[in-house]
Image (cartoon, rainbow over all chains, first blue to last red; front, side, top):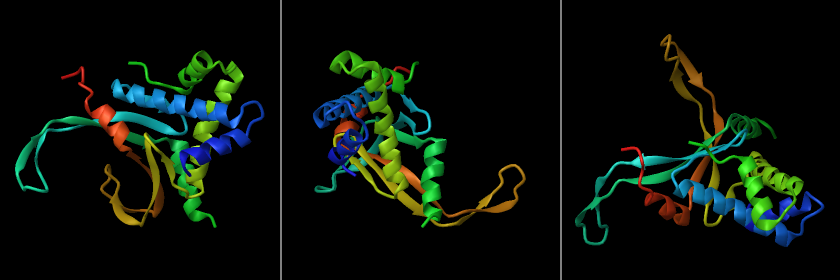
Length: 97
Length: 100
């Protein structure tokens, strides 16, 4: 499912909002989620999961073209931990059909 | 530190887009519910600019009860993984942590 399919599915499941309104809402939600992580803050959605940042230590890397060794700085990467309901529902689907 | 939750997301839709509170709450609920529903149907979710939710089937593997040391197999399972997109990764990696 892509973002535009998600928007269509949400629009079809409720009466009040147009596809355009839903599109704007979904973009706003995703932007707020990205901003939150960019500020180093967590996102917690019960039954879905949580997003947080994990730190990656500085390391020596290599330029794949020249083979030259380069020092890579430490950085943060986004991390998602599925919530209990998400884990259970996805895992149940393995045992169905 | 306060984490972002569904109620702040609904609040922002109310303030920025002028959705009424009930619509705002419903859209936020449907957003997460439809993603979960897709994953439950074994369908990957791709949100460009943010990231992809992928599914991985893991086969049974040997495990151990850490307390008793007893061997118990970890059953085959399907799990969700999140791969952040390039745009999200670059927005986040420049974050300078406050705790040293």
